[in-house]
Length: 392
Image (cartoon, rainbow, N blue to C red; front, side, top):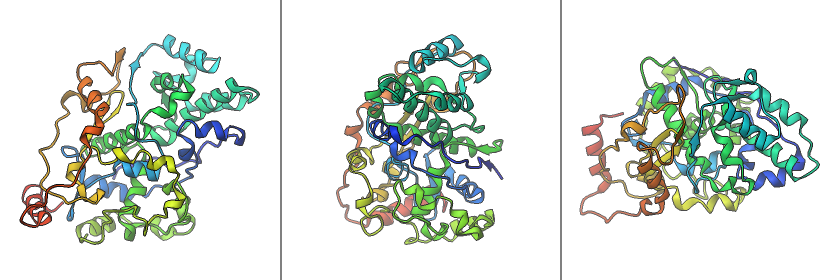
């Protein structure tokens, strides 16, 4: 069974910077507390993940975490510029960027390759003075890098963060213009694809997002929520172990059995209707991005490209599900890794350019309701699904 990161308390921030933090789009994600992992549940989900379709295959059809889920579970901005750009692998470039943004630079011993150790960022944030605008902005950029390294884009070690994100923080007023939510979702999909390989021993990525999605969509498989009116919705299960220790000891066999016996009606397709989530607890800026939640588009985060195959799970957006298009082949862009010296602009590199442009044209790829066929479309879909993809 694959191992998962043990959650650690989130990095807190000085209350004096709160208004500035809100301007970046990272305020809500900063409120997420410790959501303990349920390792057996994560492993059961990985068994149902299909990298060719970028979906979970359950008895009731295909489903997956979407941009809508990212927005409501983590509170991240989902519409905006793709999270991508130039990556340089030299320590000198990393040093220069830190000097420009923080006024100080780490030593080589404070880094791991192209990654900055989180311990250096924590030491830096403790010593920054909040006496002027420059100090406040440096503090918040440091806090965002810690968030990225621990919760949103964390690797298996969870001890460092790649410096490639730093250039996107240069212009403080432009930080909120990026689609950090779609980049986070790309990392989750990539983590699931990697974890589904037979030789993989561990899963990383934003597991808080995966767990929150599962508990919202399959409430009968969730621990007892502790804070039902919290936002982001991940905080419903903050420190769930304190109130539901029994859930911690459920085994892989328990979740396998639950998925095997899953029936229509147990999966919540439209999970954020007003009878399930009070819209008054959700900030207005979150809904401002809802136009892109159903877009059938690539998810972009530098070298990481994944596919948001919304035509395969239309029911999650309240639409009729018909037979979807063929699987999307991302070719060389899928599985790209940052190993060895790489100095590339991922916006213009041949393997990624068309996918970045596809995201840029995302408004042209939003789902709309299908014309109603003469026969029942869901019956047609389920017949196709079980004939072509099996029962799960």
